[in-house]
Length: 60
Image (tube, rainbow, N blue to C red; front, side, top):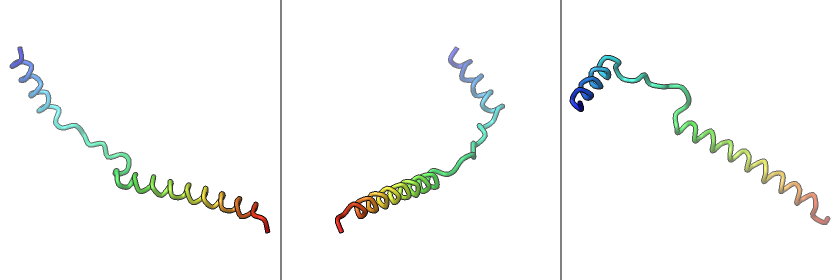
């Protein structure tokens, strides 16, 4: 039975060919760069807001 199963699966793989490549989306390095840029932008906004708040509440 194992030989028959191996022959059938090999025949199906040969007939169907390799699976098509899924080329949707970005590469991993591009995705990481975009996420890093987003994180830096959020951090910059938070730091700017906290700095403005603290400077606004300092005694003159």
